[in-house]
Image (cartoon, rainbow, N blue to C red; front, side, top):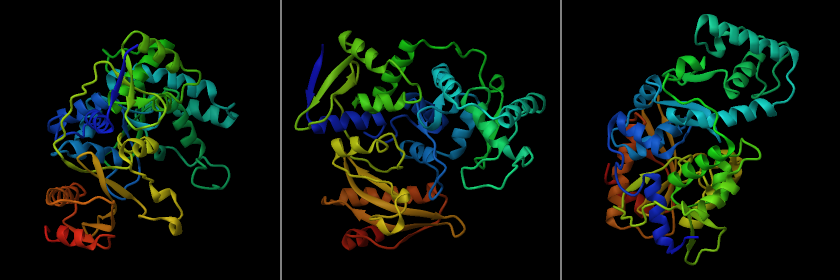
Length: 396
Protein backbone atom coordinates (compact mmCIF):
# COMPACT_ATOMS: atom_id res chain seq x y z
CA UNK A 1 0.00 0.00 0.00
CA UNK A 2 1.53 3.30 -1.12
CA UNK A 3 1.28 6.30 1.20
CA UNK A 4 2.44 9.88 0.84
CA UNK A 5 2.83 12.65 3.39
CA UNK A 6 2.84 16.20 2.07
CA UNK A 7 2.58 19.73 3.43
CA UNK A 8 -0.66 21.67 3.34
CA UNK A 9 0.98 24.10 0.89
CA UNK A 10 1.83 21.29 -1.51
CA UNK A 11 -1.67 19.84 -1.16
CA UNK A 12 -3.14 23.18 -2.18
CA UNK A 13 -0.94 23.29 -5.27
CA UNK A 14 -1.98 19.79 -6.32
CA UNK A 15 -5.65 20.66 -5.82
CA UNK A 16 -5.34 23.91 -7.80
CA UNK A 17 -3.48 22.20 -10.62
CA UNK A 18 -6.19 19.53 -10.87
CA UNK A 19 -8.87 22.24 -10.89
CA UNK A 20 -7.13 24.12 -13.71
CA UNK A 21 -6.28 27.07 -11.47
CA UNK A 22 -2.52 26.82 -10.96
CA UNK A 23 -1.74 29.03 -13.95
CA UNK A 24 -3.40 31.12 -16.62
CA UNK A 25 -5.10 29.36 -19.55
CA UNK A 26 -3.86 25.81 -18.77
CA UNK A 27 -6.11 24.37 -21.48
CA UNK A 28 -5.36 26.99 -24.12
CA UNK A 29 -7.92 29.21 -25.81
CA UNK A 30 -10.94 28.94 -28.07
CA UNK A 31 -13.65 26.29 -28.33
CA UNK A 32 -11.07 23.48 -28.29
CA UNK A 33 -9.97 24.61 -24.82
CA UNK A 34 -13.58 24.32 -23.61
CA UNK A 35 -13.74 20.74 -24.82
CA UNK A 36 -10.38 19.91 -23.22
CA UNK A 37 -11.45 21.45 -19.91
CA UNK A 38 -14.76 19.58 -19.76
CA UNK A 39 -12.93 16.37 -20.69
CA UNK A 40 -10.46 16.97 -17.86
CA UNK A 41 -13.04 17.85 -15.19
CA UNK A 42 -15.53 15.24 -16.39
CA UNK A 43 -18.43 17.34 -15.11
CA UNK A 44 -19.28 21.02 -15.40
CA UNK A 45 -22.02 21.97 -12.95
CA UNK A 46 -24.90 23.93 -14.38
CA UNK A 47 -26.84 26.54 -12.44
CA UNK A 48 -29.79 28.67 -13.50
CA UNK A 49 -28.99 31.66 -11.25
CA UNK A 50 -28.21 34.61 -13.53
CA UNK A 51 -27.34 37.36 -11.03
CA UNK A 52 -24.06 37.34 -12.94
CA UNK A 53 -23.35 35.12 -15.96
CA UNK A 54 -24.48 31.56 -15.23
CA UNK A 55 -22.11 29.29 -13.30
CA UNK A 56 -21.17 26.92 -16.13
CA UNK A 57 -20.07 29.83 -18.31
CA UNK A 58 -18.35 31.48 -15.34
CA UNK A 59 -16.26 28.36 -14.61
CA UNK A 60 -15.12 28.20 -18.22
CA UNK A 61 -14.33 31.92 -18.44
CA UNK A 62 -12.20 31.65 -15.29
CA UNK A 63 -9.83 29.32 -17.12
CA UNK A 64 -10.17 30.31 -20.78
CA UNK A 65 -9.29 33.99 -21.38
CA UNK A 66 -11.14 34.37 -24.69
CA UNK A 67 -14.19 32.35 -23.66
CA UNK A 68 -17.51 33.10 -25.33
CA UNK A 69 -20.78 31.55 -24.22
CA UNK A 70 -21.38 30.39 -27.78
CA UNK A 71 -18.47 27.96 -27.42
CA UNK A 72 -20.43 25.72 -25.07
CA UNK A 73 -23.48 25.91 -27.33
CA UNK A 74 -21.28 24.90 -30.27
CA UNK A 75 -19.96 21.85 -28.43
CA UNK A 76 -23.50 20.77 -27.56
CA UNK A 77 -24.60 21.19 -31.17
CA UNK A 78 -21.54 19.23 -32.32
CA UNK A 79 -22.54 16.47 -29.87
CA UNK A 80 -19.16 16.65 -28.13
CA UNK A 81 -20.79 17.24 -24.72
CA UNK A 82 -24.24 16.60 -23.29
CA UNK A 83 -26.31 17.68 -20.31
CA UNK A 84 -27.53 15.35 -17.59
CA UNK A 85 -28.53 15.29 -13.92
CA UNK A 86 -25.67 13.06 -12.72
CA UNK A 87 -24.75 14.09 -9.17
CA UNK A 88 -26.15 17.52 -9.99
CA UNK A 89 -27.25 19.06 -13.26
CA UNK A 90 -24.32 19.67 -15.58
CA UNK A 91 -22.40 19.05 -18.77
CA UNK A 92 -20.30 15.92 -19.42
CA UNK A 93 -18.08 14.67 -22.25
CA UNK A 94 -20.12 12.66 -24.74
CA UNK A 95 -17.65 9.76 -24.39
CA UNK A 96 -18.78 9.40 -20.75
CA UNK A 97 -22.44 8.88 -21.66
CA UNK A 98 -22.49 5.16 -20.82
CA UNK A 99 -21.68 5.99 -17.18
CA UNK A 100 -24.95 7.89 -16.86
CA UNK A 101 -26.91 4.69 -17.56
CA UNK A 102 -26.75 3.36 -13.97
CA UNK A 103 -28.03 6.75 -12.79
CA UNK A 104 -30.89 6.62 -15.27
CA UNK A 105 -31.73 3.09 -14.17
CA UNK A 106 -31.72 4.27 -10.58
CA UNK A 107 -34.13 7.11 -11.33
CA UNK A 108 -36.48 4.72 -13.10
CA UNK A 109 -36.40 1.99 -10.46
CA UNK A 110 -36.67 4.32 -7.47
CA UNK A 111 -39.47 6.56 -8.68
CA UNK A 112 -42.74 6.37 -6.86
CA UNK A 113 -45.70 4.67 -8.47
CA UNK A 114 -46.91 6.98 -11.21
CA UNK A 115 -50.45 8.21 -11.37
CA UNK A 116 -52.54 7.15 -14.33
CA UNK A 117 -52.48 10.73 -15.62
CA UNK A 118 -48.67 11.01 -15.50
CA UNK A 119 -48.19 7.59 -17.12
CA UNK A 120 -50.58 8.53 -19.88
CA UNK A 121 -48.96 11.94 -20.30
CA UNK A 122 -45.47 10.41 -20.55
CA UNK A 123 -46.62 8.17 -23.40
CA UNK A 124 -48.33 11.08 -25.16
CA UNK A 125 -45.27 13.32 -24.76
CA UNK A 126 -42.92 10.65 -26.11
CA UNK A 127 -45.26 9.94 -29.04
CA UNK A 128 -45.37 13.63 -29.98
CA UNK A 129 -41.60 14.05 -29.89
CA UNK A 130 -41.17 10.90 -32.00
CA UNK A 131 -43.60 12.31 -34.57
CA UNK A 132 -42.80 16.03 -34.49
CA UNK A 133 -39.19 16.25 -33.37
CA UNK A 134 -37.66 18.25 -30.48
CA UNK A 135 -40.16 20.10 -28.26
CA UNK A 136 -40.14 22.31 -25.18
CA UNK A 137 -42.64 22.37 -22.34
CA UNK A 138 -44.34 25.40 -23.92
CA UNK A 139 -45.23 23.24 -26.92
CA UNK A 140 -47.67 21.34 -24.72
CA UNK A 141 -51.02 22.70 -23.64
CA UNK A 142 -51.50 23.62 -19.99
CA UNK A 143 -52.85 20.30 -18.77
CA UNK A 144 -53.08 21.30 -15.11
CA UNK A 145 -56.37 20.17 -13.61
CA UNK A 146 -56.01 22.09 -10.35
CA UNK A 147 -54.53 25.46 -9.46
CA UNK A 148 -50.79 25.51 -8.80
CA UNK A 149 -49.75 25.34 -5.16
CA UNK A 150 -46.23 26.70 -5.60
CA UNK A 151 -43.00 26.97 -7.58
CA UNK A 152 -42.32 23.21 -7.76
CA UNK A 153 -45.91 22.23 -8.47
CA UNK A 154 -45.28 21.37 -12.11
CA UNK A 155 -48.07 20.64 -14.51
CA UNK A 156 -48.31 17.04 -15.81
CA UNK A 157 -46.56 17.70 -19.14
CA UNK A 158 -43.55 19.19 -17.34
CA UNK A 159 -43.45 16.28 -14.88
CA UNK A 160 -43.64 13.82 -17.78
CA UNK A 161 -40.82 15.51 -19.70
CA UNK A 162 -38.52 15.58 -16.68
CA UNK A 163 -39.19 11.94 -15.78
CA UNK A 164 -38.51 10.87 -19.37
CA UNK A 165 -35.29 12.91 -19.26
CA UNK A 166 -34.10 11.47 -15.95
CA UNK A 167 -34.75 7.86 -16.95
CA UNK A 168 -33.00 8.35 -20.29
CA UNK A 169 -35.89 8.16 -22.74
CA UNK A 170 -35.30 11.82 -23.63
CA UNK A 171 -32.26 14.07 -23.64
CA UNK A 172 -31.96 17.84 -23.30
CA UNK A 173 -30.58 20.48 -25.60
CA UNK A 174 -30.90 24.21 -24.97
CA UNK A 175 -31.61 27.30 -27.01
CA UNK A 176 -29.37 30.36 -26.87
CA UNK A 177 -31.81 31.78 -24.29
CA UNK A 178 -31.21 28.71 -22.07
CA UNK A 179 -34.62 27.19 -22.77
CA UNK A 180 -34.80 23.40 -22.48
CA UNK A 181 -35.55 21.45 -25.64
CA UNK A 182 -36.35 17.74 -25.24
CA UNK A 183 -35.29 15.29 -27.95
CA UNK A 184 -34.80 11.57 -28.54
CA UNK A 185 -31.39 10.14 -27.61
CA UNK A 186 -30.96 8.75 -31.12
CA UNK A 187 -30.79 12.33 -32.39
CA UNK A 188 -28.22 13.51 -29.82
CA UNK A 189 -25.84 10.54 -29.43
CA UNK A 190 -23.24 9.98 -32.18
CA UNK A 191 -23.29 6.49 -33.68
CA UNK A 192 -19.73 5.72 -32.53
CA UNK A 193 -20.42 6.34 -28.83
CA UNK A 194 -20.40 3.29 -26.57
CA UNK A 195 -23.83 3.01 -24.95
CA UNK A 196 -23.32 -0.33 -23.20
CA UNK A 197 -24.24 -0.47 -19.53
CA UNK A 198 -21.12 -0.50 -17.30
CA UNK A 199 -21.10 -3.12 -14.58
CA UNK A 200 -21.08 -1.91 -10.95
CA UNK A 201 -17.28 -2.25 -10.68
CA UNK A 202 -16.72 -0.20 -13.85
CA UNK A 203 -19.10 2.48 -12.65
CA UNK A 204 -17.37 2.72 -9.27
CA UNK A 205 -13.91 2.98 -10.83
CA UNK A 206 -15.16 5.65 -13.21
CA UNK A 207 -16.37 7.67 -10.22
CA UNK A 208 -13.03 7.31 -8.42
CA UNK A 209 -10.95 8.27 -11.47
CA UNK A 210 -13.14 11.22 -12.35
CA UNK A 211 -13.36 12.57 -8.81
CA UNK A 212 -9.64 12.33 -8.08
CA UNK A 213 -8.74 13.60 -11.54
CA UNK A 214 -10.73 16.79 -11.06
CA UNK A 215 -10.01 17.33 -7.35
CA UNK A 216 -6.39 16.18 -7.18
CA UNK A 217 -6.75 15.10 -3.56
CA UNK A 218 -10.10 14.01 -2.14
CA UNK A 219 -11.79 11.79 0.41
CA UNK A 220 -14.40 9.08 0.12
CA UNK A 221 -17.07 11.68 0.89
CA UNK A 222 -16.49 13.54 -2.37
CA UNK A 223 -16.47 10.30 -4.36
CA UNK A 224 -19.72 9.13 -2.81
CA UNK A 225 -21.29 12.51 -3.52
CA UNK A 226 -20.58 12.06 -7.20
CA UNK A 227 -22.07 8.55 -7.11
CA UNK A 228 -24.96 9.44 -4.81
CA UNK A 229 -27.76 8.78 -7.32
CA UNK A 230 -26.83 5.09 -7.50
CA UNK A 231 -27.71 3.39 -4.23
CA UNK A 232 -25.56 0.46 -3.17
CA UNK A 233 -22.69 1.55 -5.42
CA UNK A 234 -19.31 -0.15 -5.03
CA UNK A 235 -17.14 2.96 -4.71
CA UNK A 236 -15.82 2.07 -1.25
CA UNK A 237 -15.05 -1.54 -2.26
CA UNK A 238 -13.34 -0.61 -5.51
CA UNK A 239 -11.35 2.15 -3.83
CA UNK A 240 -9.84 -0.43 -1.50
CA UNK A 241 -8.94 -2.65 -4.46
CA UNK A 242 -7.35 0.29 -6.30
CA UNK A 243 -5.27 1.19 -3.24
CA UNK A 244 -4.08 -2.41 -2.90
CA UNK A 245 -3.17 -2.44 -6.62
CA UNK A 246 -1.23 0.82 -6.34
CA UNK A 247 -3.58 2.76 -8.64
CA UNK A 248 -4.61 5.08 -5.80
CA UNK A 249 -2.41 6.19 -2.91
CA UNK A 250 -3.22 7.35 0.60
CA UNK A 251 -2.29 10.95 1.30
CA UNK A 252 -1.59 12.48 4.71
CA UNK A 253 -1.39 16.25 5.05
CA UNK A 254 0.94 17.60 7.71
CA UNK A 255 -0.93 19.37 10.50
CA UNK A 256 -4.35 18.51 9.09
CA UNK A 257 -6.57 16.06 10.96
CA UNK A 258 -9.28 15.00 8.55
CA UNK A 259 -10.69 11.75 7.22
CA UNK A 260 -8.39 9.72 4.91
CA UNK A 261 -7.50 11.43 1.66
CA UNK A 262 -6.55 9.85 -1.65
CA UNK A 263 -4.78 10.67 -4.88
CA UNK A 264 -4.29 8.89 -8.21
CA UNK A 265 -0.87 7.28 -8.39
CA UNK A 266 -0.06 9.20 -11.60
CA UNK A 267 -1.09 12.57 -10.16
CA UNK A 268 1.53 15.27 -10.76
CA UNK A 269 2.86 16.44 -7.38
CA UNK A 270 5.57 18.94 -8.38
CA UNK A 271 3.33 21.92 -9.10
CA UNK A 272 4.36 25.55 -9.49
CA UNK A 273 1.81 28.33 -9.09
CA UNK A 274 2.06 31.50 -11.19
CA UNK A 275 0.10 33.54 -8.63
CA UNK A 276 -2.89 34.23 -10.84
CA UNK A 277 -6.05 35.85 -9.48
CA UNK A 278 -9.42 34.26 -10.17
CA UNK A 279 -12.95 35.48 -9.44
CA UNK A 280 -14.68 32.14 -9.00
CA UNK A 281 -18.22 30.84 -9.21
CA UNK A 282 -19.84 29.41 -6.06
CA UNK A 283 -20.37 26.26 -8.15
CA UNK A 284 -16.75 25.93 -9.25
CA UNK A 285 -15.19 22.49 -8.74
CA UNK A 286 -12.80 24.15 -6.26
CA UNK A 287 -15.48 25.83 -4.14
CA UNK A 288 -18.49 23.54 -4.29
CA UNK A 289 -17.30 21.23 -1.47
CA UNK A 290 -17.44 23.75 1.38
CA UNK A 291 -15.86 21.65 4.16
CA UNK A 292 -12.99 20.69 1.88
CA UNK A 293 -12.49 24.38 1.11
CA UNK A 294 -12.29 25.12 4.82
CA UNK A 295 -9.93 22.22 5.54
CA UNK A 296 -7.38 22.88 2.80
CA UNK A 297 -7.70 26.63 2.22
CA UNK A 298 -8.91 27.93 5.60
CA UNK A 299 -11.80 29.59 3.79
CA UNK A 300 -15.18 29.32 5.50
CA UNK A 301 -17.56 29.98 2.62
CA UNK A 302 -21.32 29.93 2.30
CA UNK A 303 -23.51 30.96 -0.61
CA UNK A 304 -25.92 33.33 1.10
CA UNK A 305 -28.67 33.43 -1.52
CA UNK A 306 -30.06 30.50 0.50
CA UNK A 307 -29.79 32.48 3.76
CA UNK A 308 -32.62 34.82 4.92
CA UNK A 309 -31.70 38.42 4.07
CA UNK A 310 -31.39 39.64 7.71
CA UNK A 311 -28.86 36.89 8.44
CA UNK A 312 -26.52 37.49 5.49
CA UNK A 313 -23.01 38.63 6.36
CA UNK A 314 -21.51 39.19 2.93
CA UNK A 315 -24.35 39.46 0.43
CA UNK A 316 -26.83 37.54 -1.72
CA UNK A 317 -24.37 36.11 -4.27
CA UNK A 318 -20.81 36.55 -3.08
CA UNK A 319 -18.06 35.23 -5.34
CA UNK A 320 -14.83 33.81 -3.89
CA UNK A 321 -11.65 35.62 -4.99
CA UNK A 322 -8.49 33.49 -5.15
CA UNK A 323 -4.94 34.85 -5.44
CA UNK A 324 -2.27 32.18 -5.80
CA UNK A 325 -3.28 29.61 -3.21
CA UNK A 326 -5.08 32.02 -0.87
CA UNK A 327 -8.65 33.27 -0.84
CA UNK A 328 -8.32 37.02 -0.38
CA UNK A 329 -11.93 38.21 -0.65
CA UNK A 330 -15.56 37.45 -1.35
CA UNK A 331 -17.42 39.80 -3.65
CA UNK A 332 -21.20 40.27 -3.76
CA UNK A 333 -21.94 41.21 -7.36
CA UNK A 334 -24.84 41.71 -9.74
CA UNK A 335 -24.89 42.42 -13.46
CA UNK A 336 -27.43 45.14 -14.31
CA UNK A 337 -27.96 44.13 -17.92
CA UNK A 338 -30.29 47.02 -18.81
CA UNK A 339 -27.75 49.63 -17.74
CA UNK A 340 -24.81 47.38 -18.71
CA UNK A 341 -23.24 47.98 -15.32
CA UNK A 342 -21.58 45.49 -13.00
CA UNK A 343 -22.64 46.40 -9.47
CA UNK A 344 -20.28 45.31 -6.70
CA UNK A 345 -22.48 45.59 -3.63
CA UNK A 346 -19.75 44.51 -1.26
CA UNK A 347 -16.13 43.38 -1.28
CA UNK A 348 -15.26 41.70 1.98
CA UNK A 349 -11.49 41.23 2.18
CA UNK A 350 -10.15 38.34 4.23
CA UNK A 351 -7.61 38.90 7.00
CA UNK A 352 -4.60 38.78 4.67
CA UNK A 353 -2.29 41.59 3.62
CA UNK A 354 -2.41 42.34 -0.10
CA UNK A 355 0.65 43.50 -2.00
CA UNK A 356 0.71 45.58 -5.18
CA UNK A 357 0.76 42.46 -7.38
CA UNK A 358 -2.48 41.20 -5.82
CA UNK A 359 -4.22 44.57 -6.23
CA UNK A 360 -3.09 44.94 -9.83
CA UNK A 361 -4.22 41.44 -10.73
CA UNK A 362 -7.54 42.02 -8.97
CA UNK A 363 -8.09 45.15 -11.07
CA UNK A 364 -7.32 43.21 -14.25
CA UNK A 365 -9.63 40.36 -13.21
CA UNK A 366 -12.44 42.82 -12.41
CA UNK A 367 -12.11 44.40 -15.83
CA UNK A 368 -12.23 40.99 -17.51
CA UNK A 369 -15.20 39.93 -15.37
CA UNK A 370 -17.05 43.15 -16.24
CA UNK A 371 -16.50 42.51 -19.94
CA UNK A 372 -17.46 38.83 -19.58
CA UNK A 373 -20.80 39.93 -18.09
CA UNK A 374 -21.34 42.23 -21.10
CA UNK A 375 -21.14 45.33 -18.94
CA UNK A 376 -19.46 48.60 -19.84
CA UNK A 377 -18.72 49.93 -16.38
CA UNK A 378 -18.41 48.87 -12.76
CA UNK A 379 -20.01 50.40 -9.66
CA UNK A 380 -18.52 49.81 -6.21
CA UNK A 381 -20.76 50.28 -3.17
CA UNK A 382 -19.06 49.17 0.04
CA UNK A 383 -16.18 47.23 1.57
CA UNK A 384 -14.59 46.37 4.92
CA UNK A 385 -11.21 47.68 3.67
CA UNK A 386 -11.66 51.21 2.21
CA UNK A 387 -7.93 51.60 1.48
CA UNK A 388 -7.85 48.51 -0.73
CA UNK A 389 -10.99 49.62 -2.54
CA UNK A 390 -9.52 53.09 -3.07
CA UNK A 391 -6.47 51.54 -4.76
CA UNK A 392 -8.71 49.33 -6.90
CA UNK A 393 -10.87 52.28 -8.01
CA UNK A 394 -7.77 54.10 -9.22
CA UNK A 395 -7.29 51.34 -11.76
CA UNK A 396 -10.60 52.12 -13.48
